[in-house]
Figure 1 (cartoon, rainbow, N blue to C red):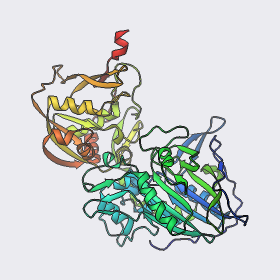
Figure 2: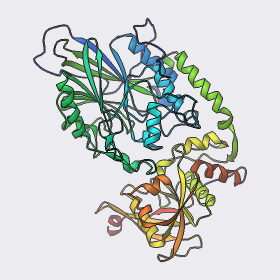
Figure 3: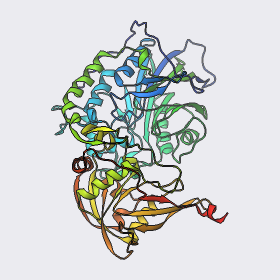
Length: 548
């Protein structure tokens, strides 16, 4: 897989390009002053973020007339990017992380190696790591980057044929960075430096197993350290690949790319952001920041004009390009890769395990007393049954897709739970369970879906806090705060210090993968089965409202 399947060159094409029509579609800023008057070198940077192995996923968008338009699926995205490359031989293809992990079965069944094969076919030049690249631990991340065999993968897998960089991700067992911090590419005779970083939130968002020695340091400090090194090497154009979120206006996250922009070296010209799956094209502190949604439905096109003598950026602008399928012919090479793995996975994906009378969505009720999610109830019930426990807790972020009414296939269930998490059964007192439930609450509501008990919480709008006010058992009795109960969670939840499960519990037992528990449980249900809202989770009137 090391050899790229095509060499970037100017191609003749007559396909039309449809650009995303949005307020941020053409941000432009004149960059460094005191440039020479020489003809600038035009460099094009094309960026993708948050693919999550969704190599054959169609994203449904609404057109101007209310019609449904399909976007993405990497055979179309590859075609659109290749068309843009044809317009400028000085083109580099980059990504900002989460290209693998949380993937559908067509990629995940083969350890996300199909996604790597597609990235190599497209000719990526450099990328960084996101939090999902750590889904199976540091060792597996190294294998994905540098090569090595895996039971689910392809024999002789030789890794990625382009550099992966991250300047703030350390392995404390070695004291070294997990990847190289930066790389330099020469384009049109001018050096362009790339620095990678990943959000500091990462350790709290991933499983602990395999990541025990992961340490993420301050993004801005890391960028500044290596920007100084790049400047000493004579690099005046610096691009940051940051798996950090941002929005078109403002900065709402503690590790927002906009805040990073305000605290880094002014020699940095562009930041490719990621993580929160939105479209962004803006300028902060003279740094151009872009993000192109997710799942390959769009890509960022950053156009730079570089002074050929000094290497400085003299002009920069960007577009976020939506890949409407109607505007492109699929790239044959990528289509072939998708078909190869789709054919291999089809028997696994198509196996029928049950039949649902109704569609189970991922949208929690926003009003009314009852807030439990039927799909979350189903998953939690399966977890509880799998390990014969008193209770089960399922994190909301682990429920990734709805379940349509009709036949339920293994592929459907895998789309809902794609992470391959492992179930852990622990023992908690009733009081400790209440603490864990309080830990997962926020002013915006609950996270965990539950089985084996019901609970009520309230939100205090005066203090902007939420807390549990009642936990009851199926027979209507109150939970005994001094009694011990067995509780099933997944290994991500167990290892997340925010929830406090590991610290409060004892007697941890390891069970099956979560998808296996759900599959086996669905097979035991009536055919067809029906899940409805049951009132397992209730939101009481807020304290502020009660005082009025």
